Image (cartoon, rainbow, N blue to C red; front, side, top):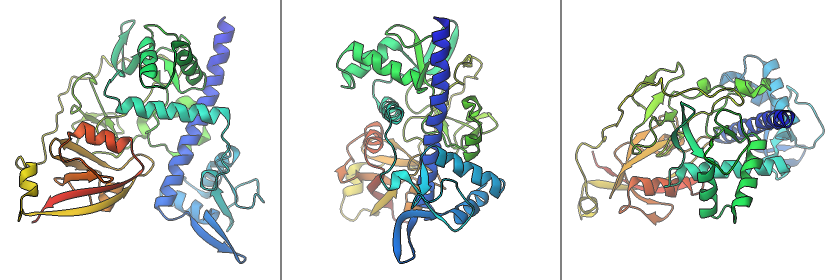
Length: 397
């Protein structure tokens, strides 16, 4: 029995690493699209869509501190080739070369292989995002054997949730789904001692799908090396998730806990926590200081819908298009009837599109939202397409 359990753990660790490679590759793909390195290119009277030049990419990786030198950059991209994430446009080279050769992400040309492992990974990512945006909030601070675990969920509760949300038609089907996700390194028992059971045992997502990965993590197949220290200093955390959604902390890369001064685009209303290293005892959260952090509204005074919509009001309406990147859109909404922009990541897509603090949200993707609260608006954003078309109103200075 113990030998079987160790075999499951070993396979889950290997699959977890592959999942990390998939996430890292997708984040890089979106960044390269944003940076215009991926585009249609013409060579020998033929146009190759959505590709990049190897030599230009290596320059970019070094300029953006993703690789120390060209040799390291080549090794990183070879990892992506080995996992069928990128390939030479004509499949004429099985190795990544520092040359003026054209390569492409398989996701951009429809050749990405949808293996069983990839399908389990994609299902896990879908469940992760759905759980984070769910109003049920079943992932929360919970205790097992004297230790407290953040964003943990009882096995029986997640089974109930899967059936309620239509993700499974029976408890047996839901258990089989969760067992597959555990065997593929997507979820884990909090102390890594048990497989998945429809019981009062606690489980967590092993993968933090929204964490910004560093490419250098690909060079180590020890998945435990992917520590949360690589988070952006804007990555939001939620201490005491059982409280209301305004209690946020920002964990800097030196692990000091400070009051939020800026917001990374990895969250709209809720925050993402890192998962504990798989098959090691997860850390206790009991040692975290009890810090009250309820950011005050950025509005100088309350504003009503009637004031915004009254004829001659000193407000200007704008329509802005925001294309999310690998970790979101880069802004936080708060308030109700109307919602307003509470914070904007200065380096994120929202800021680039013209989103500013104190703007009021009128509509999201043609849906009028002035009568809704921020939780509902955030859910509309999180469950919608990556490209947001938002109408906002801002005061005329």
